[in-house]
Every structure is written in structure tokens, then in C-alpha cells.
Image 1 (tube, helix red, strand yellow):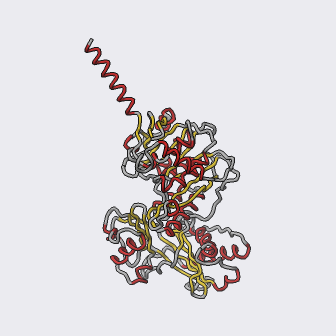
Image 2: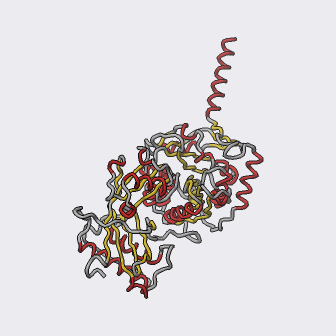
Image 3: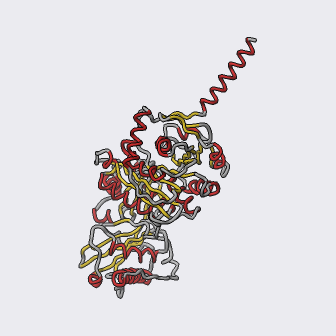
Length: 511
């Protein structure tokens, strides 16, 4: 009998252990947010009460919300969750990523429940397992959710705002666009309108810039987000033009939305930690957005010019003896396109359409258009990377330089005759393994380390009289805001490019 009792006790113990292992305890309660149920409930309910997103009467397909400590990002995150209140949500699919752990693939939590100070919330095991079954790169790795704020910070909000809902926590490992596509395809095969499921994409925006710089960076990131172009958002974030730590959760959500025929997004709230917490010297940016299943009052995605980066000067002239990307006829044609595009827009308020057969002018190359009036800078806007034919980029950037550079008032049609147009065509960015592959003078360089990045165009070294060490030291320390000698560290990503610069003054008959 004693042996039987021991066996029964052991089985009971094992059973209880198995049950306990299926409850994921909160890791951040008491640090990132209150450990007291009463305090946490009061805090989140206060945020939700204060949040006043415009009511649209539309069904939310997904929200994008931040994941910092609640004192920093809670007031912004509340806007996204407030947009969901009143909608019958069966399961919230929370898509995050791993800040501190590296693994390959996509982890989906497929069992048990999560425990916060507000109580336990069940995982929708059936839905989670269906997602895992879609692709071999999707599997369950519990380590992806340990000490990870990108998922955990959304759970108490779900418990308060979406009472009774279950969750499916998901975390990306490596930042691979292909994995975002894989998850989006898996979700699109499973999620149907009316099934009561909603996606929550977790991300913050720019990290650790001055208040003014953060607003500038985040304004551009939000503009690209509103265009709902997943590829462009991913490319610009990888290059450091946009900053979004949860780029894969957002990209996967945008792709899933596109597959569902969803083209409506509303930016509900933007602020940074300088607004919410008060210290404006070194801030982090936050956004709440909602994607809707139907059109209506929300933002209807249009097609503004993409990949815009504002410049202050042009790139350096092509070096003698170096193979040119464009011949004289191609340069002349691009200058004609720029002028005709700008003239049509300023005089007729229309975008002139162009069609070019030249394969070089149809290459996807980055380009800047610079305008000078009586020798003085009058506007300069361009893109670092090509996202369409070069001739179309030049046509678009000519208009943007004339009307969209915030440093200048929009150009008037009366000024057209006084404007000289200059075009800088950039070679594709090439990742290099170290500074030994950088040529100064000759190369422009983009460096990226974590969430920080900076770029110098090729002429900077020539104009400043810098050698390679001075150029890279200034680029890292002054432009990117990282350690001045970060260029010596293999962990710092480095990209090089060349530029060809030509103007109407350079080419006879160009104007």
C-alpha cells in the first residue's frame, strides 16, 4: 500500500508540475509596470479613459502599439487598445520579437496561459497550433518569451481592454523579411473576417535621440507607415532612414493586411518619452495606429512619394577616369524630365507622366534633386535607395524639392526661370566588411549600429579636407551619434556608394 501511495503521490506531483509549467509567469511586473493588481488596473484604466481616438465605426483588423515601460509608452499604447474596445475580440495575436535572445525562425506560444498581476489569460492553443502547422520555420521556443517586453507589455492591456479574450503570443528571432512574409502568409490562410481575431504588432520608434531629432525621424517613419508599403518600410529601417525596433511585427502585419485586401490605416497617436515622461534630452518614440477592414473615415492609403530623405548638399562630382553610370544623353534627359515635371506641377497642378525605353533610366537607383536660385540652395530632396525606375524617381523628387523641403517655402512658377537643377544619381548601397574597403575620396558611407545610423555623401570628405579616419570618425561620432571609433568595430554595419552629380549648367542645352 505504501508503494502504491508513493506512486500516486509521485503522479500527482508530476501532474502538478506539468500544469505549473504551462503557466508563464510575468517577468516584468514590479519593474516595467506595477506588481499590484489594484495599482496596475487603475493605471491602465486611467490611460484608456484619457485616450480619445476618433470613432470610425469600422472593424479593426490590427493595431500597432509600443512596448516600453508604462510610464513612458502607456499613454500612447492606450490609443490602440481604446480603438479595440467594444469590438468582439476572441483572440489577440500579439506579434513581438526578441530584444535579448537570438534564435532562427518564429516562435509561437502554443500552450497554457500567461500570468500577470491581473490574473491568468489563456493562450488560444488551437489557433496557435494551426499557425505553427503552416511552415517549418514557425515553432514553439519558450525562451523567446523570457524577460521579453515586446510581448509581455501588451498582455495587461489586453486583459483590461479586451476582457475575456485569449492570446497567441508570437516572437520573431532574426530580422528577416522572408520570415515576415512567412508569418503573414500563415495568418492570411487562417484569419477570416468575423472570426473574432485581431493582430497586435508591437514596436517602438526612434531610440535615444534629442527631442527635435526624434520628431524628425519619427515623422518620416510614420509617413512611410501610412503608405502601407511593407517593402519600403523594411528597406528604410534596415538602412537606418526609418527607426522601428519591431520592424518585423509591423511588416508582417502590413503584408497580412494587403493579402486581406485592407488598405486603410489611421495614426491614432504619436508622442515620445519627452512628451510622456518629461526628459527631452534622450528620447524614444511611440506610435499607436489601427488598420481597418473597411474604408470610411480613417486614413485611406494613397500613394505619396516614397523613400524621401532630405538633403542639405549634393554629392561630389564623378572622378575623372572612373566609369560613369550615365552618358551625356542620359544626363540631359533626366534634367529635362526634372524640369518638365516641376514645371507641370507648379503651373498646371498636375504630375506629368513620362515613359522611357532606355534601360539605364529604368534602373532602380537612388537620386537627389537639388535646386539653386541665383546660386543659393532652394531645395534638396531625394532617396538613398531606388524603389522604381530612375526617371520616375527624378520626376518625383523634382516636385518634392520644389514643394516639400521644409527649410524653404514652396517654389512659385514665377521662379522657374531663375532655378538651376542639379541631379545626384547614387549607385546601389554595398555592404562592406570593414574600413579597408572604403575609398576616401570617392565613397559616400552609411553606418548603422543598433538603432542608430548616419550617412555622409561623397563630397563631405573633399569639402572638409578629411582623410578616411577623420571622415569615419566624424560620421560615427557626429552624424550617427555612436562611439567615434565604432567604425573600427566589426559589429558596426557599413555601406558604401558612389554618386554622379550633374546640372543644367554642366550640360549645354540642358535648360
